[in-house]
Image 1 (cartoon, rainbow, N blue to C red):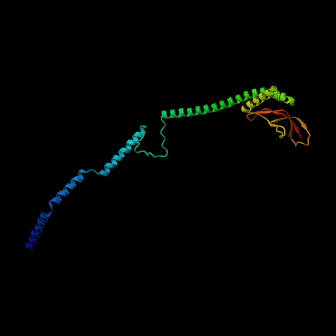
Image 2 (image 1 turned 180 degrees about the horizontal axis):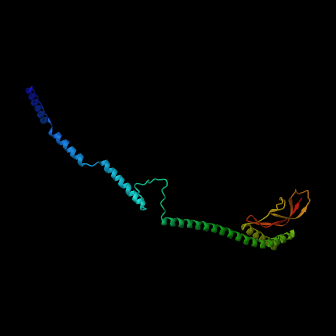
Length: 231
């Protein structure tokens, strides 16, 4: 029995020696190096978490001091973000541009109003002169109408008639035209009825006779025609 125990002990010692000899020293060294690196390398996730916590603490401190947080971290497209204020130069340019436009519009209105007033003043002055000339035309017409038929070939009468035609031509070129009355329908805007007659030869409300010729100047009445109207 003792010999058997000694034999088993010697066999176990040989197996242990063989096993220790077959182990790869390189693998053992790598294992030892890995253990050393693991011990020396800090936890990255822990370090990142510490950095984030430090950033949040800095932002909180800035907010407490009244400073705005970093713009890179803010939401640049936020709906409630305030608009940037306009530059004072741009505001001044807009103000001056608006003022110039208003002044130009006021000047244009002033120019149109002045031209209209000038035209009205000219028309008023022309009417005043025409009203003073019309009685002269009336006298020419009465004088020529009173000339007997046998004296119409007289050089004096012929000269007076030529002067009358010349004056009528000048007035017509200036815009003065006689109003047609006799045989026309009565128009209160053009005619002044001073007499009414009952005559079957004329239609109702027709001018039967003209006592004094009326004239217009540029579509405005200078003098109404004095007429007799048939009922």
